[in-house]
Length: 634
Image (cartoon, rainbow, N blue to C red; front, top):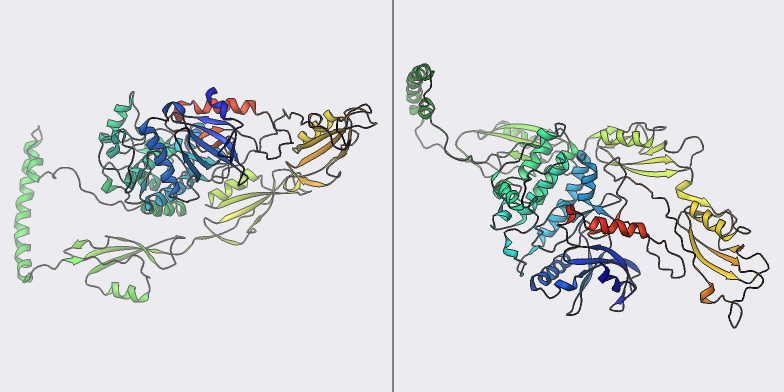
């Protein structure tokens, strides 16, 4: 890591000023930098010098830049710039503040249904976008998923992605990805397509729901063989509280044969959203071919054993009676069968409106015996047929028993009264009713901190399941506003401490010649009692004493060496926020794409002091060396 410290403080291509290292991986080192042209923080992923001449490593590096540059999606990390020269190779990426899903899962164990659905839904949206561009990620795992403080998911590391009509990194293609999450076709070296990403996501869902991986062994080769040959333990055997519908979705995603998996992310997303609307739903599972031929009646009778004569005798008597009955029935049926039985091809009803006309037609149909099932959904208009069984195009030689699932609209409930609840209890109530929520803080003189003042929509109003409720919670300072104290007359030490205690920031500090005692504050940039938000800078002018010499020709501006920036070694208290799907403290670490870091706010004001950040740098080193994240290239 030390060999890359030489880049800190340098400006790449006259535009990107490198501020510090935020992560080191097997192939690359990641820096936090400031884009001087766009005035924004960025993450720079630089190929390590020792492998910069390796053809495969360069191909993978370029491959990632090509893959991500083709895409633009809120759940995929963005690439702003790419530079591949002989002397240096780097990618300029979106700077992400958050932690890997791997770290979050390690801390939390089993995740809640709400979390699983939220994170999986966002990953599916990202993969659907990538697949639409002909890109297969091929390395979906928690280490390559970033979780932001606001609950947003970002998919990263397309380094081994498969691009349509482009040269891809082979690495023999047999051990590509991470063995704990790779699909059977990846492990066996067969053709890989978008369904391989779906399998990897299914393994992630299994781990999120149970807290355990489906396959573990002493060596990667053993795990890969288990992915090919073995069936995982049913998730419900580990987590007995998981909904049946979730277990079904995981099971389909993790099918060994790709033809029995979800064929696209959109198919999987559709069922996931139905589970979100109705956690108690049980899906109609698709039929699939069973291995081997079914055993005949004769083969069941030739197994031997002490009860064989009795079983055989009873079975033989049954067969004789059956044969006589069958001959009678067949003789009757033979008279009626004067022509070949007509083959019925099932029509496509999905997307049609189930109205009175269609209902009457099905009722009088000689072709169908229809059963109508109603389910709530926000994805379809009320009355639209969402699903049918059997599917369109199926061939039958008898009257078809047709099941149509019809949208009954959005489910509405009455908004409960949450006033005076503790906000955590209020959030739990909203979750129990399948409602999203946003927390807003307001000042209230009649409630304690943390108590709910009111909600929007208000109590008693009708609200659609899945809608977002704004919960207004009492907090001492309205929206984080604080009153600026009178710093004049304080010593500089007292003023600095007061600024930090109020969660404000020290701005420019200027020393001037003055009759006041040295170190006494004589003026401030913001007037006292002014209400400002937390984090606001306050500039101070401090007396250098009557003998202070500014060493400036015009005597009006303090010289550079005398305009100092006091080192702020006090770290502001960390604010804990909740991911929108979980009543827990949200991740506090920050990271640039894939390397984790607890970074402070980037400050473009070169005259204002910056926190030292020594502790957070150590955290970066520890997290980037974690064995769990070893598969995620920095």
